[in-house]
Image 1 (cartoon, helix red, strand yellow):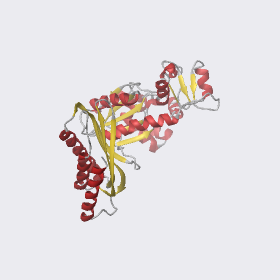
Image 2: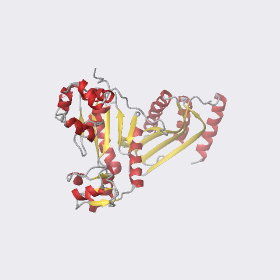
Image 3: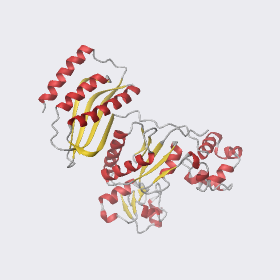
Image 4: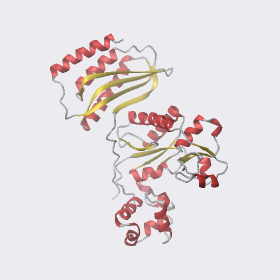
Length: 367
């Protein structure tokens, strides 16, 4: 049975390391660029789309890459720079979506079930990532993780593609089996030898014989995938350090009541998420970006962890009243951090009241 009640987005930063190098070095743009160094003992980390036209691929020996693309530009890359840009992108994604599963430094799944038109969401994500970093991403949309990842590879680079349940299985039939995530090169070569080249070939092949070739457990998964079945859920990383929400307003505003209303709405949403995950927060951070892109944050840490909505709302109110908003606001954000599991003891109501009064004095006098 196809589980089509979910809506999942998979995004992938296009040729990530190579794209960063081309972003930072205009002289590399439009040229075959290979990241991984020029030592014969190195391997290709990634390469630009210009280099891929020559057959260069990730994990390929630099020696082979040089033979395929002797005119290529070979660089060692800058992992710190890549990590910084990846962090920027994921902070934005995790501030706007609650259920995000990072897969690697340059890709993730997002569960957007019930959040509106997924095509519109994907378009907004793409625009925001490009505005934030100058990089492009490709986005796939579908009702499960397997098909969402497959869709993100469909219109690369800088593309969007959606696979619906009504497209299955015939949309996949012309694809080479190497496009099926999880079927490696050696397995595909083994299947090629018995006449399986496309998804349609695989779809029509007797499953008992297929299981003998690639193993029953993995064979069943592959058969399910090409029938559009994948029950895996998008799960968040267990070490996530913060939860937040931010948005760019449709129009700049100086209305303090409107800004607080948005922050309070975010607070309720984030608190509910933490409560569902049995987490408590200790630190609240308000983020403001003005119309001229000047940005500031204001944080306050309680002396204890809590997920009590009333307490958090009180502290948000005190924090907000201490802010001097002297220009039209373009972006508003709220983040809860310094997280802890909720099986720890919380302060008594009397202690909470005392801390609230202390917080109020501290924040007022800090301005």
